[in-house]
Image (cartoon, rainbow, N blue to C red; front, side, top):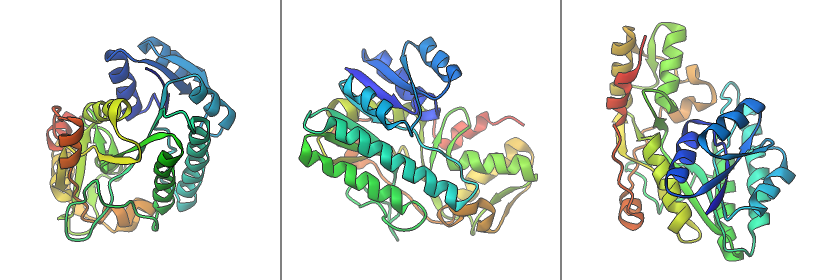
Amino acid sequence: MRVFVTGATGTIGSAVTAELLTHGHTVLALARSGASAEKLRATGAQALPGSLTDLDVLRAGAAQTDGVIHLAFDHDLTAPEALDRAITQETAALHALGAELTGSDRPLVTVSGTPWVPGRASTEADPLPTDGPVGGRGRTVTAILDLASQGVRTAAVRMPRTVHHEGRGGFAGLLTDAARRSGVVGYPGDGTQRWPAVHALDAAALFRLALESAPAGTSWHAVADEGDAVRDIAAVIGRRLELPVEPVPEETFGPFGPIFAMDQPSTSTRTRRTLGWNPRHPSLLQDLENIER
């Protein structure tokens, strides 16, 4: 297949691009800059200049390919308005892509987060949240999945809070970055809350499987580790950075503070059984051993 990929140079996107090329697909990737275009071409992908706000470019990318994987998102977490702006941009982009693919039966695979369910691990059958800090994203993904009734083979790959590679990425990466700035590995709450995780290379394999074979209107969980206690994650980071570990107010983490403080384990039983997904790369706690001072 010839696949249009947005966000192809990010942590997940780079892995997805490599996964697609390795398995015989060709890639047309959105490139926001000349440097990004050069990076893509070096991998064997073709670059399409433009950004997530260039809706005509997005439609053109979808029009000339056999399917789309959407990964681009502005991860500016400095203020609630920045998050709202990123969700608004993504919503417009996804609707443009969906409109271009309507009636074609081509796949549109998008990304979202695993939902939070009080008292148990979330599953693929649980709905995405439609309120709270990321409620807008949940509403958008739900609307895109509904395009299955209009001839688009839509699928959503739900990512856990930490997607990691060589000790970097996700919520655990944010803890590490904050620790380097403050000199303390801080975590919200009592640290018993659990975060699910997946290695970026395992997540990439699931995006490919969803593109190739997921039925229309379905959701899948890229969860390799059901949930590590945040204080255990912080302990590894503290040991690697040789910094003290202690609880901090959830406001330390801005608009994502309440999410950081949630107990949010998740499972991927249906995904593994149905799509044949088999995570095989290091767990989060193993991968954090790659952190360097």
